[in-house]
Amino acid sequence: MGTTQGLPGREQPRAFTAVTYLVLLLLGVMEGLIGSFQYSRGPAPLIAILLAVMIFVTCLLCGWGMGSFAGGLVPAIGWIVASFVMSMPSSHGSVIITATTAGEWYLYGGAFAATGGASAAFILWARRQPRRR
Image 1 (cartoon, helix red, strand yellow):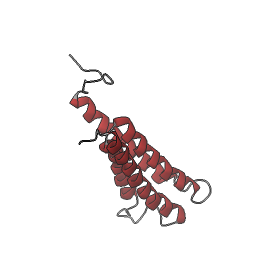
Image 2 (cartoon, rainbow, N blue to C red; image 1 turned 135 degrees about the vertical axis):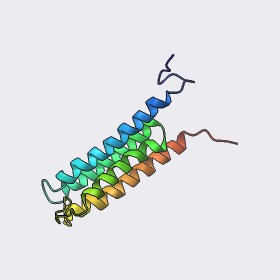
Image 3 (tube, rainbow, N blue to C red; image 1 turned 120 degrees about the horizontal axis):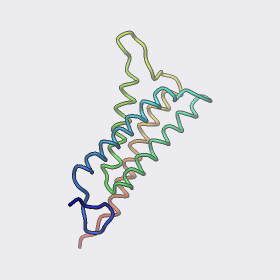
Image 4 (cartoon, rainbow, N blue to C red; image 1 turned 120 degrees about the vertical axis):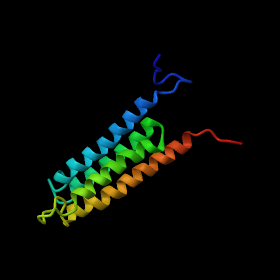
């Protein structure tokens, strides 16, 4: 018999948990890929800042929703890998994320926001843990 999520005293199947973490990783990767092409839209760094806030909120909510530190860390890792890969020059010399104000806000602000969101998820996770005496 399968177990149900949300019932006290019952654990989720390991396969379900693994798939959930994989989806969170893909969520971070997709945010990184979409942001890499959209960071320079609108007024100079405004969209880049909003995308950084979005990855912070994503990491925080994923950590809270999963009830674990890894829940916040996994989308952050996906975002960082995707964004920094997109910032590397190709063999032809073209770069997706340029060294403009918006590009720097997106990369550095987003990396700071992703680690901040993962750290906030860790704090939420640590507060949920029962205290030992």
